Amino acid sequence: MTPDFVIVGAGFFGCVCAERLASAGHNILILEKRNHIGGNCWSELDPDTGIEVHKYGSHIFHTPNQKVMNYLSRFTSLNEYRHTVWTTFKNQVYSLPINLGTINSYYGLNLKPFEVEIFLEKERGKERYDNPQNLEEQAIALIGRPLYEAFIRGYTIKQWGKDPKELAAEIITRLPVRNNYNNRYFNDTFEGIPIDGYGALFHKLLQHPNIQVQLNTDWFHVRDQVYGNAPVIYTGPIDQFFDYKHGRLEWRSIHFERQLHEVADYQGCSVMNYADPQIPYTRIHEFKHYHPERLKSEKTVIYKEYSKIVSETTEPYYPVNTPRNARLLNVYKQESADLKNIWFGGRLGDYCYYDMDDTVEAALILVDKLL
Ligand code: FAD
Ligand code: UDP
Image: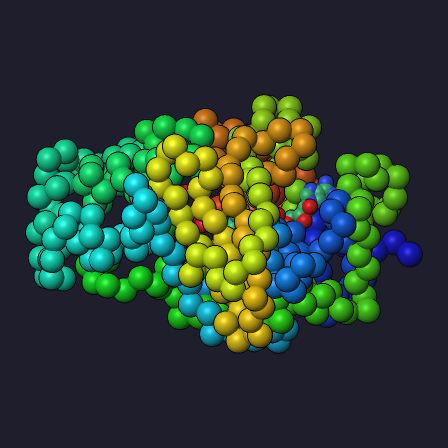
């Protein structure tokens, strides 16, 4: 039977589109080139420890968006996890995002909250950027050079493989700066990890009898053979869709080194960042902390995260926000807008640094438009 819609990619974008369209009575075929659903948010049980690991790196659900929360609540509840991150610089551990604890420990001070702004203003005054043009200028405009050099510069170079002067200012505005000891990483109303894991959430999203999923199937290998004229929702890389004819958009990829440790707790938190440029990895994830409600094992599993450029054999993870990539994206976007019967979406299709809630919201909006 010819499906009513073909969806390329079983990540959050594809799965939400599939669930909504199937519930409205349409027959859906999802093609996914990997051997599992869930895209980069996939989680599964580690075979040696039974700990739920996030195969493509830590994923913490957080959103201020009631509509997205209402929708997802039909498929999962969230546990009580609240994300905190720490960072190691020169063998000392500091709070992240940069807060009063970070500032006092770094400078050896005992500032009070009402003194922080005056202190930072003095630091910024030493090198002023009133209209920051790139990530480095933006960071110095927020926190001054010494904190930037310690906690941002080395990490950013490792993560993006570029000098922070080449990167867009907005990348760093994801990180708040606080004048108190609050070390929650996110400010959102809703936060947590799906209680039965992301894997279970995606299985529920795709449970509808109108949805058929074909794994291990790359759309580019089958697009000319089948599926008639069914409309397509494409969530793969936008430049690949056009066979890179205007050039390749740059992506950052990630490589994980898994280690098993015979201790109950390896690092005391789920994510420890490493700010020193000499340490080759950017952070270490210890997944057992994401489910404080589950039984503890006496072993633990950690993933060391290394950032690298995308090659033929690596997966694209992060769009690289530079002026060159923004211009190229615009060219592909204009071309895609002229096509009939095909819609682009998700972080690869839009070449956008979407969080999960943004992705779900964008999928709900697209389906509203289609229906
Ligand atoms: P994806 O999850 O990438 O799914 C796209 C799918 O399409 C993939 O499964 C891919 O295999 C498939 N595909 C591509 N091309 C083809 C093809 N030709 N044929 C068939 N299938 C194809 N967000 C948060 O809210 N909180 C977090 O803590 C968080 N942490 C993150 C950490 C990392 C390291 C990264 C990279 C992202 C993080 N995100 C986080 C963002 C989150 O991963 C994305 O919002 C989400 O994955 C977007 O879903 P998607 O469906 O657009 O893309
Ligand atoms: N960043 C940094 N030091 C850190 C953490 C983050 O310099 O210890 C910068 C880095 O440039 C990164 C950006 O802040 O790309 C956003 O960080 P976030 O933790 O939001 O990135 P993600 O979790 O999406 O990788």
